[in-house]
Amino acid sequence: MTVASTASKSGRGRTRAKRLEVRVTAEQNSLIERAAALQGRSVTDFMLTSVQDAARRAIEEHHQLALSVRDSEAFVDALLNPQPVNDRLRDTVRRYRESAGV
Image (tube, rainbow, N blue to C red; front, side, top):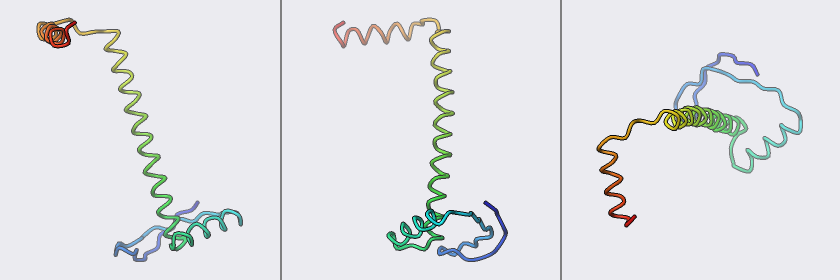
């Protein structure tokens, strides 16, 4: 994939200043053209939207993975190094047991 500078207006009035180029097989080209036609969109619009969606998903998956690792580490740390029981916790447990009938 190559990137080149160019300037054109998008459908929303924003200037597109970069160009992405990609080489595809004849089968890939046919598939992409068919999908774009089925949605009533140009190949450029179809490709741009599809790539943007994929990029957003990749970023979100990475973000979720980062949170999962951080959350897992915090959970394990809390299990291995619990905070000492304080009066507030004792009171909360007492109220729970009273309300739950335990």
